[in-house]
Length: 530
Image (cartoon, rainbow, N blue to C red; front, side, top):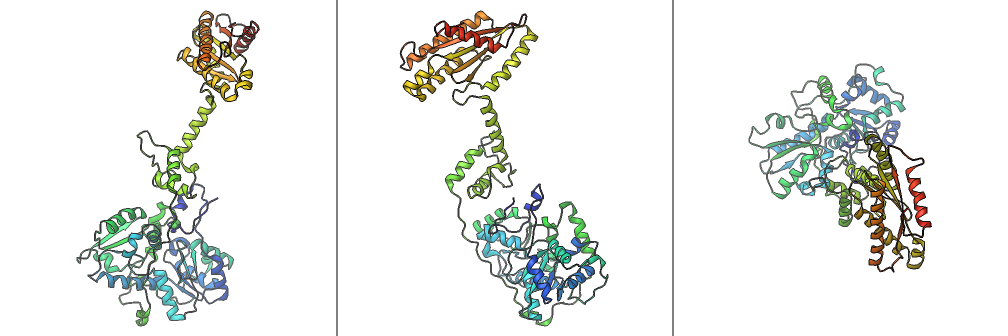
């Protein structure tokens, strides 16, 4: 299940292509829009990018479909762009402005207000084109006019808009109203609002700013992508560098938004929009009374956020560990730019360690080690013993070298547990394990068979050599018991020895032979070898 945290979502759309299961979609307010069209009094602001989404249906067919669905008025978003571009041009020509960040992209505004408050004072006090167009429509048709916006993604809450839709939502609305754009006439059924531009480009920037750039002595810095925001915040908010006008967009235009489609189709989408773009008007397209439409905006600082607990963040980073170079992994496989950012999100409950590849790898290694190692003694587990025993038998058959096993059993461990407690009994088990490790060679294997039983596998060792090793272990355990404060003879082991001779292998499993020899040693009075 994918859960979107509304107060943190900036509608950047990056999560849509990042999800390998196609589990994330961008949705708008279809129900609210449906209620508006059923009333038959609403206006629709249709973003110019609709041409690329609804192709092969023509722009005329899409506009006709919007009217058929029940909208009273359909606007192509040109007036909003023109109004905003006019205001930007006024600011552009004012020499008193220092650094000014373009504010027509709702994603940029949401990211700055939420995560980079030091940049909020530098946002241009200009609203988005969709909000400006909504104000223009209400000025022309009455303040009670419901306005719906349809674009590439459903923008964050805009008070001027009664509902926001994605193009997929608009398709759903057409289906609910039983409207098929491709079956409608190729010419406008109603004369739409102005569709030609004069002073603007798509997105609301003034054409003069784009064409002239810095040629008139006014600096223009073009920046694309949210990943540039940390450097921008540092330069402007901390170092107080005057950057001039910063033309900042979250993506390469609305057509570059992940919700618009795959990246490899970006230039195809641009070609379609340019192909259907009408010729630019030689005269202004805004009516004379458009000057009464306010396009200003005030951007509030984001809400104070609960900082993650520093202790929890540190614990998560310790659980993840560091790379071979001793530094954080920062592999970005979790979707966060660094391990520290991921740990902060995990501490707030917005991420899970199951997203962290290094942590999962570490867990897999731990599980493998736990399966092959006894937790109490640190010796090999029964599973590892069986695997090694099979390997040694095959190796012995090929090389002709014999090997031996020792089967050890602690004498009277139950009595020790009943008299001194299980913790003391566990201490004795660890002492026996340490003595086995100390006595055998690095090429041999010591394993805990279960309970108070141990097995030592001695490679390239005959019966006589195994007996010498067994006697050394027996004496070592007895001496270690006395060092722990036990009486002489309280801590002893009985050992059964069996040899695997590849030239004449004996009948029965090797461990069973060693186990039978162990019973012989116990029958002889314990603390013995057989």
